[in-house]
Length: 571
Ligand code: PEP
Ligand code: MG
Image (cartoon, rainbow, N blue to C red):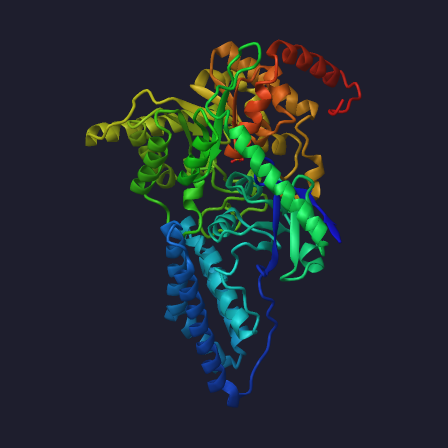
């Protein structure tokens, strides 16, 4: 049986997974109203208390199974759920409903949860509002015990291929720590942050495989072929052998590519291309170096906020950035300020902004400028880190020039504070911005003047230009980097940056995709930032090209494209 779906996972060594299926039940529990007789009240209260105890035991077990290498915030996250279980405000409200309304334990818990959520939602403080999701996690766990629907224990996932309805980027970090072989989700597109993170962490994954968990059995042997987006089940041994051989071949190829790691990415006519790495965690520095990165072109700092309830403070930001900068040994490091919101919500929230269309909502620089108490510790930490190496600060999702002005004003204020406190920083730290909204691409000449460098974020630029939600697998087929509108915007940004003499890079997934690299080079982009596992493949490709030829071919290609001549990108 073959379940066809969308494949993700380009890059050496992360294309094939073989393992047993692990069905992860992630959805909420459905509870219907039910009542008990007065005689059953004491027994029901006891049943509820036992469920609370069992939930607490589950959490303690999970905490004990977390490997020592796991970031501390993950165990803190579990501790906060334990505290919620022990909190009287939850248990006494439920027991009251059981005693006085004779509601069943499940129904009482559900009603009490709804009442608490109403209170959370009315709170002014956005952080407190984020507690709603944690409450839901805790309630869900207790409900599953009451209804006898036990969840698999974290810790049993080693070597498995996890099947889930959907996974957040935070879940992917958990799965990585559990050393899963791969994962499959029913929802989500290949440009979602969940998919990007899987590629970056080298986890083979297939996303958007609707119906997969209905078709597949817990425990059955699966093969993921992410190049083709296939999940193979019920395979004969000969097919398993074939994929094992392919996996070994990929590994050998990665070893071969690694031999050229320290050679520069230079075309055959001698033009140097800068190849940078995109990272999410400080620990990704190792893989950036192993794959010969010239520096970090995009450090997605918002991952510091995941799998925890509290907000990291300035010291934590600073310590993490210092680790990255020291690890990169004088190479440039572009630290992107928080891009929280949309599919990377603030800790504990689902949609980040609470609005119906989070990708268009209070995300990234918009959130940071609205909530200076969130932004300021990060700005101070980046400035302090700038004293340790070649640090660049990059602002995400710019739409208006005044966002640059406001951010620069905050940076200046932070500089004054640090100076007053006697803390070192680089007063000339370059401040750049991401061009990932069509408005910013069209206004690129102004942004190129206002900023010290630019980086094109094609993941969002394509999402916003073509009006397709990057996490929605239903419209994934429209995600087209070859669309004339997308390429015209990219060309416009390249020309604007060149005219202003402003350094330009690209850090969207397109930059690390061998299908687009020759076109991008021909269009005039000479700095590309990508997931570390794509670097060596792309370097090998660049070393086989003549830039003059690429330029001529790109010009002809764009001319035909803009004139509306029918074409196939494969020709
Ligand atoms: C992008 O949008 O292309 C980008 C690099 O940023 P992110 O994927 O983190 O939104
Ligand atoms: Mg983006």
